[in-house]
Image (cartoon, rainbow, N blue to C red; front, side):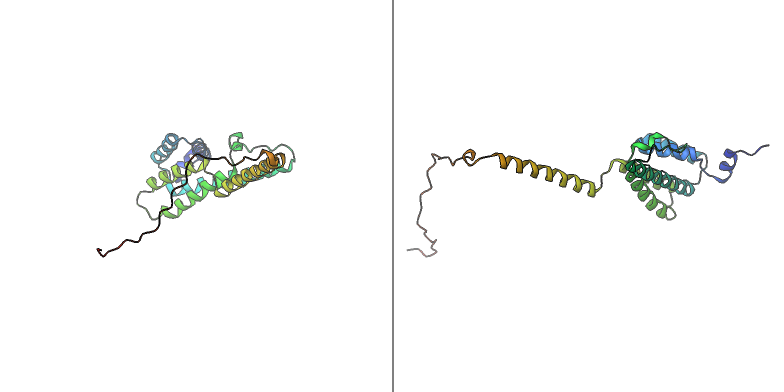
Length: 193
């Protein structure tokens, strides 16, 4: 009998690269049902949870590095970047930072994995957390956007100030309200007079 890749993977409880990539796609698609379904299938097939997580982090790292290189190449305009076979154009729509955030979450999971009784529960909750981080925006990006908006508002207000004249400034309006009457101060006395 010829030994095949599925035989070897099954014997050692390893997960195929294709299954790992399917899991990454489900994470990026933010499909929790698919993520849990894949984990259920892998668990039923007897896959080693620790090794699965390690392989997943390794594959995320490869995609992350690929996306950084692709972004760098595009920014330098050195020509078209082609994706390796498993890194199809699907990944090109994602910022490299989302892969880094997922790796951070899963690395924390990996360090805790040997301390917990139910590895599957920790893995599933960490995967859902990693999935939710896909669209997260870093505080640096928020501050950068706010500063950009502030600069644009200041530029617009400078333009408006230069166009305005002294005569166009609003004049104080008179109101029909009377000023309150002044009442002399009378201290409160505790003695009866």
